[in-house]
Image (cartoon, rainbow, N blue to C red; front, side):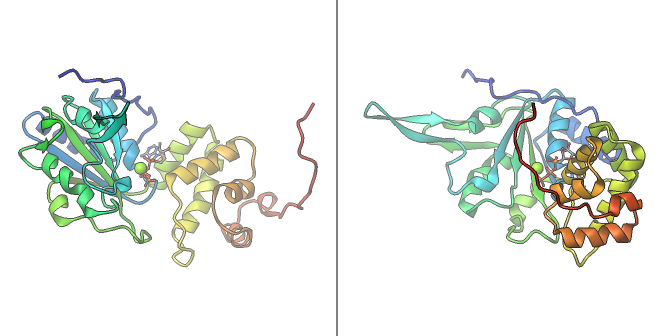
Length: 285
Ligand SMILES: Nc1ncnc2c1ncn2[C@@H]1O[C@H](COP(=O)(O)OP(=O)(O)OP(=O)(O)O)[C@@H](O)[C@H]1O
Ligand SMILES: [Mg+2]
């Protein structure tokens, strides 16, 4: 069978992606194992802590094509493989990317939000391809067999604040190695902000002092992902004050923010409430 690999690309490397040394070593072990027998990896952690980036980086490092599927969007079984379509009064089967991807040797199959599919039925086919025999019968396609060295890399958010997230099915969980990601230590996160946004080191520290103040405040119940600290840092790098950067990047009320800024005691210049000034919003000539 000819496989159309147009959508299956080896992802670009992120030159500024940091990982725990232990995780790096063990991911290399999974890579080795995948040459001997099927390997499935589940990456868990809070929102925006780098799960999806890790999957991309893993694929990039080992020169593997990557295909990503939103399991959270699946509503019924069969949806991953294909669909009956109508063309000039005749029905035909339109094969989706999933069967192509799992039949591509060495492909990394990223299953996003594996714990969030709308109905458990949607996961039925996944059970078959994730199990030891790694194949599934699809009436329209025949026997679909997972190619050698394919790695299934599932990700799911796992944090206290995630309500509405189904616990992952135990039988499904049983089929995975697990790698749990934590938010980066402040020193490393600072390095990421500096490298990715060009923010100055001391400003990055200011941002992270503020961000960690919010992260460690249980009453606020706001989690600030690395994605968000990057957004804040990028604004600061472009000349925004910390106050502005936080207001525009976070969904947090101005009042709460002002008082937080005070407690963190950044320079008075930063804290001063700027007067709201209104002007016309038109192109500048
Ligand atoms: N360890 C890291 N080193 C460098 N950048 C990182 C790291 N972790 C996360 N980032 C950056 O933070 C942003 C969010 O990461 P990513 O999308 O991978 O998180 P996620 O855990 O998949 O998020 P979600 O829970 O929303 O799916 C990306 O821009 C990513 O590059
Ligand atoms: Mg993600």
